[in-house]
Image (tube, rainbow, N blue to C red):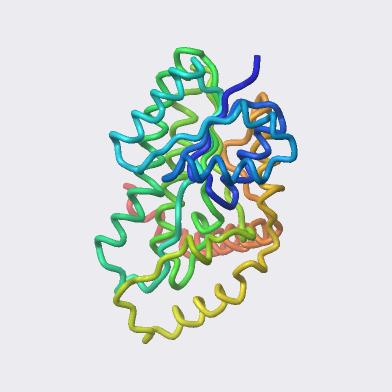
Length: 279
């Protein structure tokens, strides 16, 4: 019996690569997008074997609660189960924290955090009924290591990591596995079409401007390959005991190690102050 994979945010990048990898590995793949007809054409052009399109189900979905529940219900009606959920949809809002408008921040959280949570909530009853399932959430190294211009994006991805870890503890008894993957830079449109900046940015913050210039230079020059990320996602979906948090890419590992050492050093330097609240 072919397994059923659901992927969100699939018109390009890691999401599209995961759809293609899933189909090539004989999953039946349901993929969400704002334009299902356009997505079907994109996927058809990527597949060398056109017969694999028989296993593809594009679903039109906006990131609001009504659309999400209707889309997941239609997938369950069609396939009868969901074995793998890949929460990939998201984008980066990058800019100075004192320049981002609250409606811009809320819109980013609506997709990266609340949309991911709503999709997960819609899928979980079916996975619990099956007593099986794999949920793979796209976080980022930015959820652990941040810097100028990245505050909001990092906040959304830190939320994804923490929700994933809590959820794993909650659903382990149901036979469900949850993993947050935390890649460093991947060659997608993440720093291009999928990036937003504050509408009212001033450019007066030197640290933020330098970071944004560096990111512009990095765009499409990242070391990460979305096809290889998709392979990791499929590997995680097949593992009996996948990790709850997985960092991807040499840059992510180096940044993580540096951050951990900074935290350890700062904790040791302030150990007396830390322990001073206990009586």
